[in-house]
Length: 638
Ligand SMILES: [Zn+2]
Image (cartoon, rainbow, N blue to C red; front, side):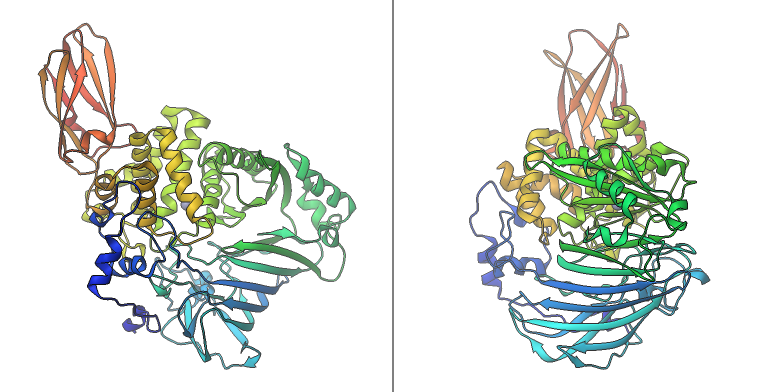
């Protein structure tokens, strides 16, 4: 039923044109002309309501909703049934009375007929999640799945939830874990990955109302920051890894394993906490009929868990916050046959160290990161599900990317489902920067071109030129390049334009203002303008709001008093940095870097000075990571 996509129970927000104009014209610090960036009407309204401000900060009226989840989850392999009892206390911090809630049931993507980005193999399909009992504020309430929607369900409240009040929901549920693991499912017959698995309250926000986007397995996350208290019940000789603090390891682990696990919190080198063989042989876990693995986490956007009776378990820790002397745990769980995973704790140790100290240069915000061998190449708060490859350089490349997601979307509360470029774009940026540190500029550039941008620049289809700001759920072919490579090129071009110190100051300004909240793209653009005191909307517009690509061309070369003037044309529209590589008549060469500043006065044409004391025989453009659609127009010869 198409109308269901139109947010049937969302709040319609309206306001008069005069109030809107007044809010957007409000004076603010720093050079600003953010109104020159396209802004959807629903987002303009947030400035009038005062939840966002035009200098890029959260407004005085900013709010977001919060919930406390208390769950017991039972998994008893090889039985495929996962059972949960769950209580949610959902706090309405909004100024709106909520007459209904939207409950997310991601697991229903496995139901036949559910809308999906791709096809579904027979062994992917299940009957979805079954709500066995449901209660609102203690009152048993019939649960009826609407046949028209799958991964979310509206629930009308008998008593509306008024501002600043909370509602208590109680679910008993079960589902059959899918045989075909993607982002979640069975990794093998006795290794399960639980993600997207529990019923939860969808996000209600200030610009979209209830989030009723179908989960199609393309977009990833948009979640409020919640508190979790989760007990995972498993048979003895199973280890559970998951988001949050393992509340009482001594309840789950036998003496020697417990001592090795605890020593890892002081060790930079990898401690082998348990071999898969020892776990299966009864040497590692408590020998109760059922072991209760109890995890707690505060202010995190989600939780995920893995359990196995035969995965190896390694751990170490790394200093992530020098000032607070805070260490974070790094762990890996894997099949002993996965050669790359024997190095995984070392890779993760390096990633947390580098991300904390270099880019973004913000102490890793959680207490741990656990990398589990699966197949998804996918991040969760404090958890990664990555495939194994024989190529350890590629394994490290992938795990660094997934751990970088700790900052975007999780720490930053990004609405990745609509604005994937605020999440994947940053993970791809940090991935490139850590690769430069790991493997040098040239190989990092080749990696970046091969995996992130060649597919885009070599595809002339109009989908690939859709503006990056296009909501992610409206994209199909262009989704990947709009989320990863293109926005990352824009962030790295901004770094080139501003210089590292100013770029980091702007990035930190954005992160300081918005971590633990829900920033929208305009908060980033406005914060950069505000922190730098510059009006960079010409740059943001060309990179993120226009139908554009990269094609720079040389249009002419003339002599000047000090050398040459090179006329450039920006055919594609993206203001990219470029190197002018000059070959002199005597065979020697020189390189002259041009930042995107050359395109500020005129986005389409620029004339740049190339100093030269001797005659130039030829010159060409060198693009590095900012790949060019047509290099035939990049060359000039005398
Ligand atoms: Zn990613």
